Image (cartoon, rainbow, N blue to C red; front, side):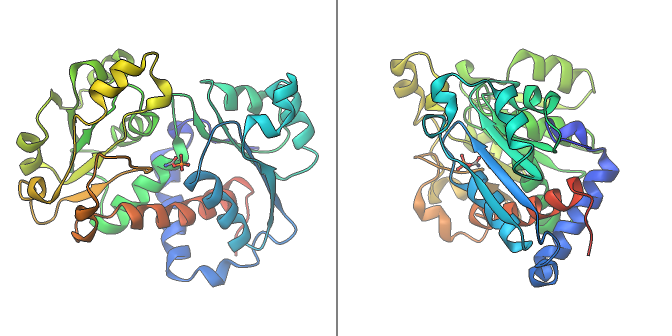
Length: 305
Ligand code: CP
């Protein structure tokens, strides 16, 4: 039995296989509509979510399965003090697979140690978000046709943004990847990502503050929200939250093929006027999230057509 806790739990070859499956699903989702008949997914969300929880549920329903779960810690027995370990032991007898989001880093990993069903990390604190990474890889692979030889700008809250940490971990495994890390000093990527991931693997990167100066060389611009819920102090959040706002004027600095991704939700960091730019693909990206999760459920449950 396999879990997905980190984006590195799948090898490059396994990731490629999963993305090809997701692309086939995207072409003809109906073909897969009975693959999970009789199967159930439990969505155990101790933190708010729109896309991740509902795309997991849509994915299982599209595959012919069923869903159960809770959408906040307050509506579960966590509010009475139940541990993640006890919860997953019980859920293992209710469902065939579980997706867990939790504010504590490592909580889905702890759950996986006590589970008899596959556990998927649906986001743990500021740590990792591997299914967002599969979504991001699928978006890039489908729209650019490759995952190598790309210059990727990551902009915004690179300190607390778990989608950024997971995406860097996943992309350093491909050749010809360069990163431009665009953030204010206070929101730079954590040292462990810089030293243990980028420098350890000799992946070229630079850290800059100007979005406009970085844009001309980018193939992908990955915008992120400043993660209000991870700040200890409201004043810092207010000072930093609008540091980067991508608008139509700034899009003139980008090349014609540069794609704008964002894991969403957005707050102010992308003006709505950018939505109509054909290079803005963040809503397509959210759609790809359903196909990526359909492919993941099938892979972890070892199901095929
Ligand atoms: N991208 C993402 O994780 O969105 P939600 O927080 O809405 O699940």
